[in-house]
Amino acid sequence: MQLWFGGRGLTLVGAVVAGLLIVGSQVSEAQRRGGGARGGGGIHAGGGARPSTGGARMSSGGGNRVSGDGGAAHTSVNRDFNNATINRTPTTTTTNLNASRSATANRNVNVSNGEVAGQRGNVNTGNINRGNINTGNVNNVNVNGYGGNYHLDNDVDYGWHRPVAAGVAFGTAAAVTSAAIGSVVYSLPPSCTVTVVDGVSYQNCGGVWYEPQFAGTSVEYVVVAPK
Amino acid sequence: MRHLPPNKMSSSSRGLTMGLTACFTLIGGAVGAQTTSKVDTTAVNALRRMGAYLRSLKQFEVDASATRDEVTANNEKVQVAGTVEYLVRVPDRLRADIRTDRKQRQLFYDGKSLTVFAPRMLYYATVPAPPTIRETLDSASKRLGIEFPLVDLFLWGTPNDGVKDLTSARYVGPAYVEGIDTDQYAFREKGTDWQLWIQRGNTPLPKRVVITTTSNPALPQYGATLKWTLNSKFNDAEFAFVPPKGSERITFASVAGQVDKGSVPGGRSRGEP
Image 1: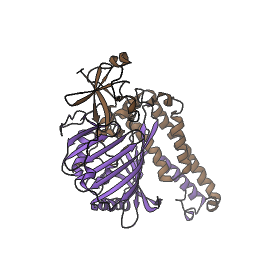
Image 2: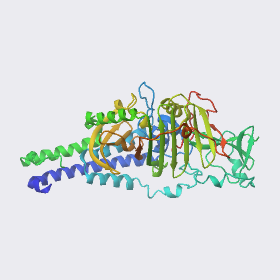
Image 3: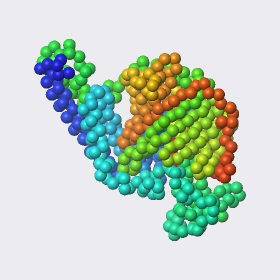
Image 4: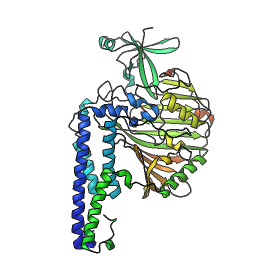
C-alpha cells in the first residue's frame, strides 16, 4: 500500500487516520450512551422487553423474563410462517433501540471498509469500555440458576432435586416464604417428594406443592395448592 | 484501503480529496448505515436458489453444531454450545434431538401430535398437531412458545423467506467450510445481521449460518455449522414418541392440553434450545 501510494499516500493515510479517530470518538459516544443506559438500568428493562430475546418474535418469552436476563441470540432469521406480511414484534423500548442502532452503525464501519484497525478499536471499546470484566458479572451469575440476574435454563443438575424416594424436607422456611400459589420457579428446593394425584405429577417440597410444566421447551414449576 | 486503486491517485490534491472522502465515508457509515446498504441481486438469487433446493428435498437429516450467546442483565454475553439433529420427511414427519451444555430435549412430530421430551428429567408433553411440518412449526412457535433452532431451513424457498425484509445483501467471497467449497454471503435486516455459507455446485445447501441479533445492544450471536445427509430412509418409528419407563406426562404452560388458546403465554422464561 505504501509503495503505490508514494508520497501522496501519506496524505491519504493521514486523512483516514483522522477519520478513524473521529469514528473512534463516535464509538466512545455510543459507549457512553450505552453505558449511561446500563447505569440507569434502562438496558435491563429494554433488554427484557425487546424482540431479540428470542422470544419476542415467536415465543414471546423474552418480553418478560422473570429473572431479568438480557435476552439471547436468535436461532433463526425468519420465524413467521404466515403468508401475510412478516410482522415482527416492533421494538418498543426507545432506549434500547438507540443503543442498538449505535452498535450497529459502528459495526457497519468495519464491515464496509474492511479495516482491521477499525475492528480492533470497536472490539476493544465494545468489550472493555462496557466494563463487563469489572462489574462482577461472574460473581453475580449463579451457576445453579437460582435467582441472581441470569437464569440458567438447566437440567444438568436435575438429579439434585428430583428424588427417587421420599426425602426429608429441609429448608422449609425458605420455600414457604416464596411460595405464593401460581408463582413460577425454574428450580426446586432440595428434597422433594414426587406425588401423583389424579394422574398429575407433583413435587412436594417441604409442604409446598409444585406442578411441573413446559414453557416452550423449558421446564418450570408452578406452585399449586397442596393436594 | 485496497478499494482505492493506484490509478485514482493522479495528483496529491486528488489524493487528499480521496482521503477526505474515505474519511467522510467512515463517518457516514457510523451515523447513517442505511444509506450505504444495498441489496445485491446476486446474493438474493443465491439465497433463493438454495431455498428452492431445500424445498425440493423430500427427506433429509441435518446435524448442526452450534453456539449461542445468552446475555445477562449486565449485558455480558455467555456462550452456550450444543448440537441439533433434525430428521425430516416431508410433509408430515419431523424429529429434533437437541443437546446443549445445559439441557437435552427431543421433539417428535408424527403427523398427528407434537411431543416435547426432556430425557434427563423424564418429563414429556404431547399436544395434537396440524397435518404438515410447516403448520406444526408455526403452531408450536405461536401457541406453545417452542422455538425450533434454525427454523429458516423450513422457510427458505417459501414466500416467507424474508427476502423482502432485507436491507442489505452482498457476496462476501469464497470460503472452505469443513472440506466443502462454499460461498459466503452477508445479509442485513432490521434487528438482525446474518451470514450464510452456501455449498457450491448442484447441491446448494447451507453449510454454515451466523446470526447476529443487532437489536440487542450486546449483539449476541448464534452460529451453526451443518452436516447434511440427503439419502437417508426413515421409517415411521423414528418419528414416534414412546414414553420411556418412569417418564411422566406434564402439560404446557397455559395451553393445558388445548391446541389453541389463541395467545402465547408471557411472563415466563422460554429458554429456547
